[in-house]
Amino acid sequence: MASCTQIAKQLQTYIDGELGASERVIVRQHLTECSACKTQMRDVQKHSAFLFEAYSPVRLEEDLSGYVLDHLPELDFPREDPAVPEFDVASLNFRAKHPTLLRERAMRLLPVAAAVLLIFLAAILSDNWPAASLASNTVGIVAYNEGDAYRVEDGSDQRARAVVGTFASLRDQFVTGDNSSLMLRILGPTDIRIAANTRLQIDTDRKVSIDKGRVFFDVDGAKRRFKVMTPSGDITVFGTSFDVRVDAQRTTVTVLEGSVQLGSTAAASVFSMIQSGESASVAFGQTTDIYPSPANVAFASQWAQHILADEKAESIFASRIAPLMTPTEVAGKSGWNVDTRNMPLKAIIIKWDSVSPFANYASYDVYVSNEAGDSVFRARIDGSVFSNPNITSYEIENSSTKRDSLSSIFVNLVPEDGTVKREVAIKEVIAQIGN
Amino acid sequence: MQFEDGELVLRCLSGDTDAYGTLVKRYQASVYATAYYYVGRHGAAEDIAQDALLAGYRSLPRLKEPEKFGPWLKQVTTRTAANWLRRNGHRLAVETPLPHKRTISIEDAREGPRGRSERQEDLERVQHAIDSLPERYRLPVVLRYLQEQSYQEISNYTGESTEEIRGILQRATRQLRDLLAEPEGQSDGEQDWPRARK
Image 1 (cartoon, each protein chain N blue to C red):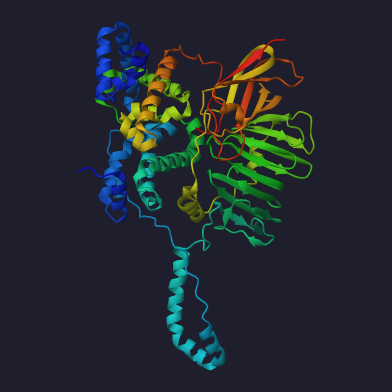
Image 2 (image 1 turned 30 degrees about the horizontal axis):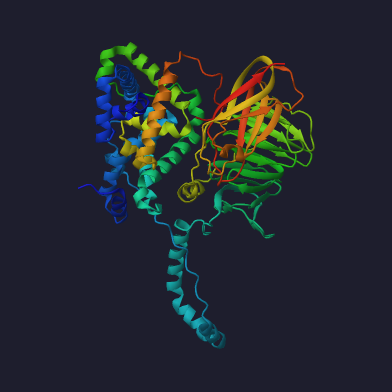
């Protein structure tokens, strides 16, 4: 005879009509004998009906197939790379020996050649624009350029002009000169507008480094974090637009939308959340707190406003580059707002659902800041912690000397880089408070 | 005679557009539900669903494993919705929401404006509760309750096995019951990190 706990686990499936025949018989039998389970079954049923009903005003009942079939685009078959013409030694030798003959022949062929050339040019312009082919590590495309801008390929010291349609690959550097600017659209999609005299490197599709200059970012709202590395500090982004100015002495960030976290390269415990409408900077080697201040955001983005994506580049991005993206699901949320009831913070406890012991889990950087976004402390959870199925929580003591009373804290969990590692679904963050 | 997805994809590639019509009929509900899950309003979700189904056809030659059309179409839809949000996210924040169908059903007309606003509230509570479920549970729940998809249909689209879907829905509905039973405005003092979009 089945136990009530076993039956309870099958009720939803039973009501959905998705139980196998033999299981169904067992549940039905049990329900005739057990009034408690029967009551529970009614609850589950009522709840399901409520959910169906709540959604009914927005349910799609129309058939879209008529519209779709009427508007079908062409099938987009991947294009073959144009074949490289073979080097024909015999004919080259013959031409070298008979220069006049060559000219005569060429004259005869001129009308044909002109026509062929025209068709060829037309084909290049309409089809093979840009002429370059996609490399396996292509992550983006130049969507705007002005003045002299260059692309330096990974591992080479050769620089080539970057123009609209130039593909961007992993570890490419982009360099702009005086009076020049550039816009890159990379997977995400993230738009990167680069001002004059800037040097930027694409480390991954979610991480770029800036040596110097000024860049405006428009990062896709997806939950995967995005990082910007600079000599003075690093910026962790959660879907937002912001302006970054970098020189040897300092890095300044102004946030237009959303929020970013700015941290000092010199001291891991120095970081601050910058909200929209605020600006903050970090100096090279800074070990004291970072304080954001209100900023004129319209002014900060003014320089980038005329930089708009070329339509053709946009469509190439959409049709050829965007499909390269492998969507990664981010487990759970990354930011937590925890009430601390005007008491000093002793520790935080992080809880997650039990996980597979065999997976390779990502380590987490844990940033704890106060209500104003100023840093309290920072810690790291090693990925191996998650591999023990008996452990589903982790306590981190407040390692700082900051023992002020806090009304609430932000806890920000940032998984390390690396696509092979899995992220764990954090369920709850609890604060331990007291003196 | 029912063709498998893989067979239909191959027929599309050889120029049989009716085969795509069959795939659209098979997946439109899931595609719409995914779009709705991301943007939360009927009209926009319908537009995104149409775009995603067209984008799916256009890039069909790139589908490596034709028998996995469903999970692949889910990715295409997610991308289409993400692009839409990127372009319109700022508008969502300021625009008065107009999430419902443009036409009013007979039931709505009979219930009058009061009935409608109560249902609107129910929908908002349900969506709020779904947002606090683990990420992996959310889409299956929306597929099930918004578009009344069977476990098999959900499985074909998300790529998870029917057994997994069964477990997910079982746990998710139990959590939803608890979340919806809580009085309004009470959460555990935690909230999503403020984000620019969505």
